[in-house]
Image: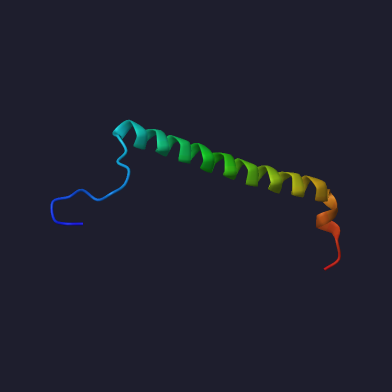
Length: 55
């Protein structure tokens, strides 16, 4: 690459960058919700017996 040339690669427009940000946030929220769901199911399946087990 010589001086004055733009680097090779894809240039995103402002609308495309905003769309990518929204999609990334949605994916992040979905992953977080799934983690919380798995945690809640695990605690629910353990039930109150988890509090009275011997140490």
